[in-house]
Length: 185
Image (tube, rainbow, N blue to C red; front, side, top):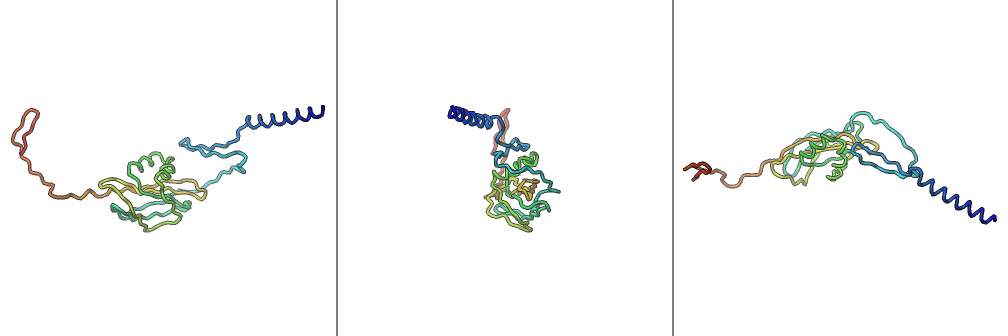
C-alpha cells in the first residue's frame, strides 16, 4: 500500500509540475514602436532595470566633398553617443527613414552599415559605386552606452551627370505638318 501511495504522490507531483509550466508565461517579450520584439526566457532574466540617457544620441554629419567613388565627411558624436553606424544609401530611402525614425535600426542593419566608436573629422568613405545623376545620403545612427539605437542623421548629395559623348547637337527643320503628323528634315 505504501508503494501505491508513494507512486500516486510522485505522479501527482509530476502532473502538478507539468500544469504549472503550462499555466503561467515563461517568456518576456519587449515590443518597440514597429511591433518588433525581443524575447527572453524568464528563467534566464536576472533583473529588469530602466535607465535614463540625457541628450541626443547621434553622430552629427557634415559633407565636405563627394565624387562617384568617394566622400569626405565629418562625423562627430554627441556626448551621450558611444558609437554610431554609418553608410551611404539612396536619398529616397533616407527620406523615408526620416519620416519613420523608429525603423532606422532595421534599415541600417539591412544596408550593413559599419559601426564606429571614434569621430572622424575629416574622414573618407571610399570604394563607392554610385550611379550618375542620383541623389544619395550619407547617414548615421547613434548608439548609446547600452547598445540602444538613438537619433538618425543624414546629409544629402547628388552625383554628377553622365558625361556627354560625341556631338549632341541636332539640327531639325519642320517641312510639313498634318493633323496628326510632322515632317522633319
